[in-house]
Length: 343
Image 1 (spheres, rainbow, N blue to C red):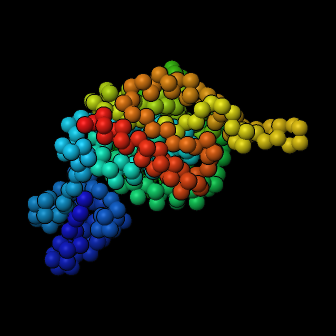
Image 2 (spheres, rainbow, N blue to C red):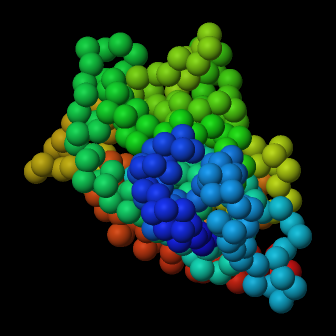
Image 3 (tube, rainbow, N blue to C red):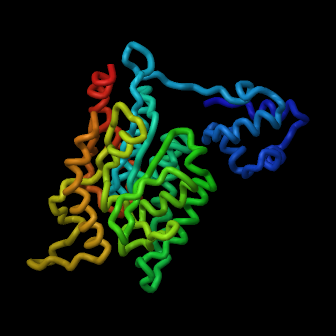
């Protein structure tokens, strides 16, 4: 999307970015990001800005929809993108999104679990994989700080306040209905064990619940229930996309085979194996649970993309370039199949 906000500000008496932000009720940083083409506004915000300049919305924003490269223009099928959980390996989702953008494959809806929920939510809000990549680099640089607010066992080893602050910085008070791409994410009701599909309310609260690794990150209270990581019940939410109306589903699986990865879950010291930490044990448990259910979950996908990520540890959030590259490579390999099936 291109916009003419800066030009219109100058034409309206040199209105400052802060003045425009105050007028439409958004943050100053939002106007800056809009003018730099780093943020796609919600429909509501777009209308507020057009009213501020007393012009039609088309005179402010120029929407550009890329067509699927099938020779017949954009596919008539509603394409859904399912993003699995998998810790830092989920950064590969960004590489997949970059390739889909480049190839002009329009995503009509997204469903994500755990890290897939975080990546999916930000993309549904901003529709730019390059912005996601920049944010991921920041997450990697802040990883020790984000996971550093330990607590004396109140539902999790990590309180999660710093993560919540980060989510506020990224997603603000955006609600699901304001996203540019329909989005849903999955969490688990820790009491009943039931899957909870979140599609309403504040997006950041839903994402916070979906990424709450049991024991590690404090559970999230939602109405009269407590929610934890959705990977326990549905690590690949392809079925959620079917319920949302998708005709064609692309599933991105970043959960490696449950084969034990020695480099991550224990190291040999002489002839003895070093005791794995509680973090490794918990993540290993999640991986085994996720993988066991994955095969049935993938049945609902038309195309599955599986980046080579066995060498990436669950907490390797600083390895953004490697993860993004693996996502791009796997997605590039899948493009011929996607286009053939959509034709």
